Amino acid sequence: MATRNGADMIHEVSAIKIFKNRAELLSDGLKGATVINGELRIEDRVTFKSSLPTLAANVADFGDKSAPPDVQALARWIIYEGAQQMNVKLASPQEVYVAIAENRIDKEMSFPAINIRVGTLDTARAMFKAANDKKVGALIVEIARSEMGYTKQSPAEYASVVQAAAMLEGFEGPIFLQGDHVQLKSAPVRSGGEAGAKEINAHRNLIRELLEAGFGSIDLDMSPFERRTEENLSFSEQQAENARLTAEKIADVRALEKELGIPWTVLLGGETGEVGKMNTRKEDIEAYAEGIVENMKRLGIDPALGIRKIAVNDGTAHGGTPLPDGTVADVAIAFDILKMATDFGRKYGWAGSVQHGASTLPNNAFSLFPKNKAVEVHLATGFQNITFDSGIYKIKGAQSEIEQFLADNFRGEWKAGKTFAQFAYSTRKQATGPFKWMVWTMPEDIRAKVSEILYDQFSFLFEQLGVVDTKDLIAKHTTIHDFHLAHPKENETASVDRGKEDTSGLAD
Image 1 (cartoon, rainbow, N blue to C red):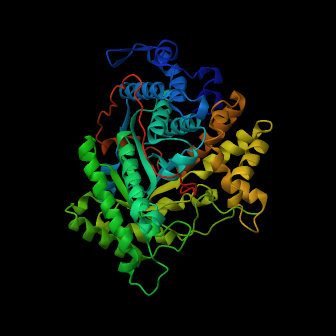
Image 2: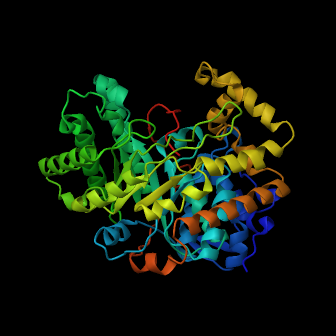
Image 3: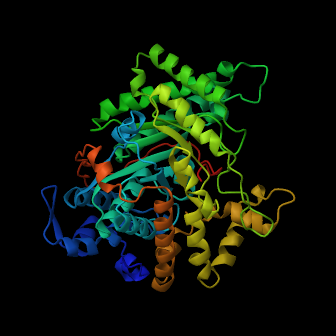
């Protein structure tokens, strides 16, 4: 029987040291390995693994406690190179999803797509330990555009910390990283002019950043451009902007793949039926799909290089709906929409439907996703809640400090008629970035308890979503490639414009 002792899934806080320069990082932070002539040489794998918490911390953005940018770049490069040697392989799930679409994989399962907002190293370790114990290969680790802002996790940081966690837990084989809700913001684009051009450029830069960090999957979310409430318009007219922009972003991704020499075909997803609003209809999907195909042909792109999955809305909302006491309301999901979207989407070569806003659902709901042919289920807030309620808020004074921070900085989001508990629950994700150092350095006993709870929840979800014993299946349908970062030069930094931070929280 596999152990779930939380102490086995965490490092001691003393293992984290932030270095001021690269020489100190190499002499005091890197163990069991050396860097010679731009090459990482691991002499002792066990000892090298012991340096991973420090390396991950030196990649992370802790505000004024962060390592300098050139130290971050070197720590990031060491993690990526170490991952290659420890058989932790970033990859794309494109081949798997194509096999599902073509019925070459007919297993009843839904890929869990895990967003980690808080305590990323510890949470990812619990996830990978559960995945190892359950022999799970059908697993996606993702982060949304909005989350990158308020959690202060760039794609490169997120990818580095996730790979470090995988190495610490001995997880081998393909890891699928996904850009979740890579959404083009409708207000500036529709306004046109300088604001519109800036947003389009920021969105393209973010796609570049994701690809450069090794993300093998991107969900292109143009659903805010739908006009489904305008009943005077035909379905094709309602979906016209969504379809056109999705096709243009597909073109962006495929062009950047070639420019950057990405070794795989990135899996792409689309969305019709903005989550939390009107439920998706068959007519919406058909108009959206036909519009994408038409626009891809106009752009000279093979439709086979388009999306392979479709996110729909079926009654859920991101983060759940908080009640006056701060708990989350039960939600009635229209599971038939998921099944309909998958069945209808096969006509376009899609693997199936994608469920958002699921992590706060009651436990008896999860087994229904694979039964209703959802190819993917996005999960985020539930794991955040575990870390807050069983972790951060167990530290004396932390809850009061965080809630005061929320009241001081996000009072404008306190909607009329809502209690403070509802406001605090809905906005506490905004504290994940500013209080990141506090979470990474929580006492070991608290972090161990959180890891136990997370491990149990991941194990439960893997079972309910039908992905236990999928390690060999996924490996069979995934081509493995090496993925290297260029060795960073002294004092090298990088700046990417993602556009103004979006605090709306488009993740589950």
